Length: 311
Image (cartoon, rainbow, N blue to C red; front, side):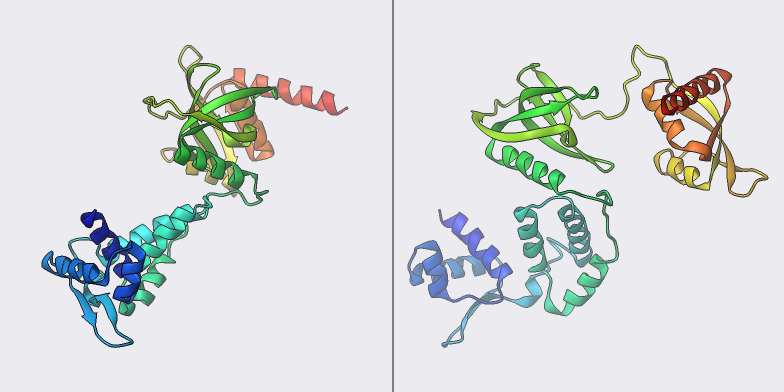
């Protein structure tokens, strides 16, 4: 259709400095005369397309149109490029790289250095310090499933270390802190579930089309319904634990103690389950639970059991 061809020509001219009419005619399988008619249509629509004659001539869009206040300002492009560059650090996506290049093509040459400098001022990298490449491969397979709309077969490891074979239909790819997840419909359980990519093995595409369903909102966090509510702990922590807690819970108040580098804090988000105790014990001597006594006693029991285990 002509409208689709006009849009495609516009995008090509935005991406390239200049292109000849015969090249456009060959690309869209039309005559050169048709291309010139298309150029006239673009000009009438307000797009400043110009044609230069001669062997070194061609068709181009006027430079001052490449950033138009009606579309993207320089600040808009800096924000978009910064976001996409950060995303590309986590996803091996050709489409993301292609989009970055398209956005760069909208930047006038006189602003290229300024945009490049400002884009490089903010770097967001949530990936782990040590990577084995497996996460990237899993992400790519999930992306392919989202694009092709075919279900996946996987082996999934639960928290107990048991594997089960599943057929899933991915709907979303999610990055939470430094971990990747997919929200998918599990055909075995017949319900939506969130699967952690690090627990997925032997991911393979199937020839089974995904059935279109409406996924529920993604909700993260530990479900406390029907369980013991949050408890408030009195903790004494050193500066390194203070930083870790402050990153996750920005409403905590840390009171400096006499001993240098130690702080007192009331921590109201503790749940007395495996995760909660592992969190406290994982801090070692950098964190001391002062109250309540019931939590202190349970921590002592676990430490004694660990000591006995290593004996």
